Length: 316
Image (cartoon, rainbow, N blue to C red):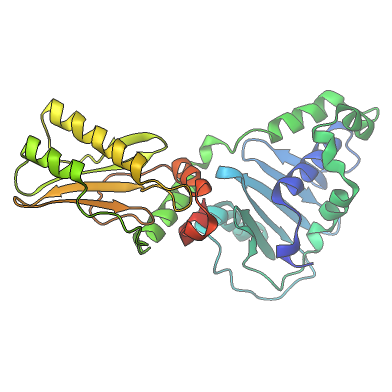
């Protein structure tokens, strides 16, 4: 089996969680062998008596990394190509224990930095998946049957912890992912939506507000909220609010159910002419603030037709 043929990450996660619940309820192996769950780091562990090891970690945004060791796989490989969000825990563990394969799953599916590696450490997990053991996560009777005369409450506790979101300590993973998304957004070209350069409502606002030459005001949308760039020129209260209302109006009018809505926008005035800039697909050089959250970007990309999603959206 190739990595891209692996079952869905969520189903593998619950298969491994079920095995950890079983082994927690009625241990039949001597540690470190068997299945164990590190709830603090959202890592499921498996080790066998012959030295095979497997780790599954659920990361921010329901991503999953899998890595492990097969003592019989001694080939030398390059570890390039592992995305930063997937590799933080792997790097540390690899230096300590020596991983022989790495795979990760995001919205775009499975990928790997070790396509030729042995997947033997995955065999017990795949066998349990084929048996449908993951059903115990939602079927109390199946869980009771799996545990038998073991500690049912201990098994329930493992499954409850496995339902938790990735821990907040994974802020490092989130920051690395955000940096990767930002770098790719900055390098992404815009696709023309054939919108007017100077909407009439912007021209009218400039005539009423009379901003100084060199004026610039930019915003981004985070979900349904308009957020000002901290570097904006300061305006009197009524003109500031009216401009924010215009940003919201234009965002609504210019959004399309197929090609999406813009992420950033700017009103600029050079003393003679006003302009209105938008960015649907990229992070523009003129925006100095933090920009939309990863969650807001994911929501926006999910609304668009696939052909209108830029390449960086696969990281979300």
